[in-house]
Length: 390
Image (spheres, rainbow, N blue to C red):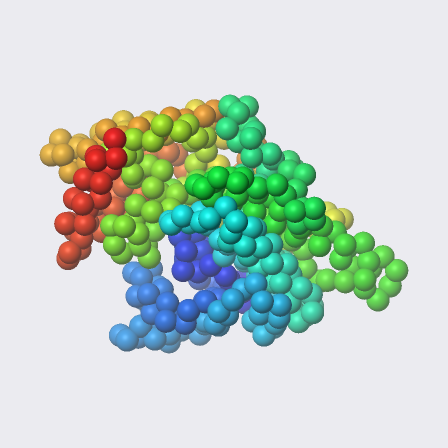
């Protein structure tokens, strides 16, 4: 409901920032959690949010405030932040690293932060949130919806009710080889999902004043995006713009050739962010257990292939391809996968954007960033690195 106060984590990230923008546009007030308070200036300097700041990038609009929590995994970290909020959206989560993580550190880098960060937030909401808090929305992923091996099987169907049989105890078996960050990330997402839902189910079974009465005033909704594609407004350098999930398309367009097939399960940034905002609506019901999931995938039928992006780029950016600005000759094999987005479209009212819009947004943003002072040279350097990696 417009005017309600939403606590938002992950506001400096790709999906989190876009969610922040849509929350404000919908009329919500937002209390954004930052690990580093200096990052507030970058958020406020973004074109979408300049109206919330003065000329020195200091906040002036009461609809957006910031709270600093350096470590989201510390017990009690959220205790003060959750007070007086009506909703919580928890986007922050450890992502596959840009640098190597030793196998011995996989659990500490991915699984523990994902689980502890979510459970700490839920516990803080239970103890300090108050009766006005009605919903917590958590960003999960399609990779949490089943065994990771199925992800590459060519038979995966990402359904909102599917679950992997993983939990914190016993500790899940993890890869022992370097470079397995993405599989470990998938395990972390699955464990965090299952632990959060188990926590909510325990609260719903009892703990309140009466026998069998719920001990919390809120319910729990998970949003499961696929690979999120779309301009990252906070990415102001070429290196930042080609990173993250956008890199699946942009790096290929810039010449990177990747031999490992992966499902071309994609969603536009706007759709993924909108799903989080629309999941706050009181008309979205969760049932007796107090939990529900929504899958956000733009190509639910599995008709998109990663290398279709090369044809899109030829069509949308013909001059840049013709002049060699965009090599448009990379490789990224695909694996077939489908998704069940019926509830997302019917309950949340999401009308998923197509692959062409995703590619246009992601690639167009890189071209714009490359025009900034000092970035053209970096743009050429990135292309050269991809060409030499063949």
